[in-house]
Length: 254
Ligand code: PTJ
Image 1 (spheres, rainbow, N blue to C red):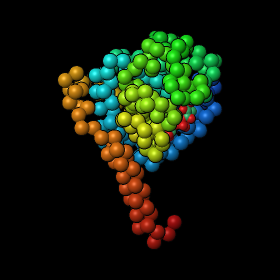
Image 2: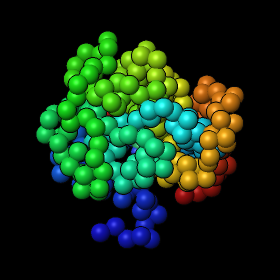
Image 3: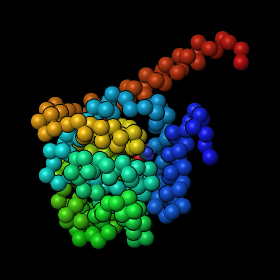
Image 4: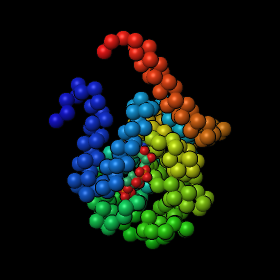
């Protein structure tokens, strides 16, 4: 049991959820590594939702509210960390949910579908009937009603190739990725540089307080390159400040 008073309680609880998801067969082996990489970037960001994240989250919600067929793609890590919150977001913006795995096995697909069903939601993806063009491998599998025909897709913690393949299909792609340098972050139309659970919770709040007219205004003038640049600038400043603090302490005896 991790005490709530522990300074790294939130982070450690997320780690526990990933481990639990791994034990249940929901999270892939590589999902443990992917989570660690995310933790590193979250450490550099300061483990809070910064302005560049909040702006991207708001516009992402607006875009999904205005979509004809918005789909949220879920994988093992997303299911383990935030299945409940993803359902709440989907219900608030009228989006479908579809499971799509990088390390696809029918067993994991089934477990993820069951996990969502246990939480009261039927999701797409168990019986794929379409393929994302120009993408080798079973991660191209999807459904006609879901990702294949979607105009807007939210792909949190996604692989760069699939993001590009979705963009090549003409889709508007939104991602949540703590690493602003990843290929997905650089390829998506909207990159939310924030931790998944924090991001989805913020998006639920935005969705609850936005109507269609407001959504139309929100999407005007958004620039993803500016958002990515701001996130890198933020990390750079934090490192500079921390380094300066250490330098000014360097004369002190430890
Ligand atoms: O369940 P599967 O088979 O679909 O596999 C899922 C993973 C995540 C293992 C797979 O897609 C993968 O290998 O992803 P990558 O290429 O490691 O990319 C994941 C990205 O998400 C990295 O840039 C991480 O920094 C980032 N990330 C990890 N955890 C979080 C995160 N971003 C936001 N919130 C997190 N909690």
